[in-house]
Each structure stands twice: as structure tokens, then as C-alpha cells.
Length: 139
Image 1: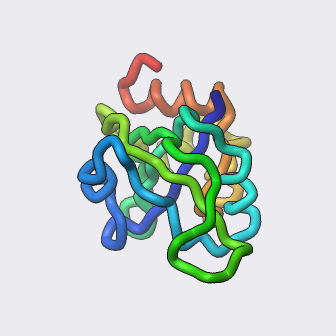
Image 2: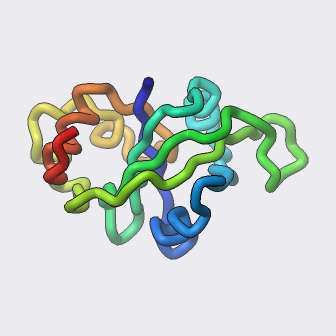
């Protein structure tokens, strides 16, 4: 299993919206960045991801799971753009803010710290565990 981070503007698509989609999940559509798209091409069913509220919140609020591998993005006719589907797994016990992540020396190499604008990014297994620790989860 690999780990990822999915960024979203909560006023456009938030955690509650994701949870409401249930087991069927939802397309992670609208991504128009090649690096983010290529990250989705690497995803497999069952991979886990952090659900990150960007803009004013800047915090990880939940855990999602990839429930459909790469396929054409239904929001465009341009075949360059593809996406995966994700479903909500559980909220974090305590959200983990970007400031908390930046203050944690063990997360200095995390993509979120060094390229916070990338909307879909990989998370190393040790980074995954550290973020869970920061949230009060056991991992």
C-alpha cells in the first residue's frame, strides 16, 4: 500500500461532502496539473490518503481510500486528464495543521512542506505514521 495526500478547498469540496458519498466514493476530478495526474496514475485500489483542507484551514482532516484506479476525468473531453475515485474512511481524531507539520523536524522532507501547491502528492510511510501520531491516532 502507498500513501497520498489530496488537497481540496473546503468551500468547494469538503470532508462532509466526501463522507456523504459513502462507499461508492467520488471522482477526484478537475486536476489540471501533470505531476498531480501522474501521481494518480501510480495509485492502486486500497491505497490510503490524507484529506487536506487548503485555503484558510490548511489542515489534514481525514483519511480516504482509493476505490477506483485511474480513468478519464468526466469533467473534460480532453483525454490528457484522468483521475481516481476516493472514499472517506474516517476523520482524524484531531486535525493536523500545516503549521504543526512544518514544526515537526521529522517531516522536513514531506512534499507538503516543500511543494504545498501540489494538489495530489505522495506521502512516505514514515511521514504517514508521524502525521497519525500528531493527530492522536495509533497508526
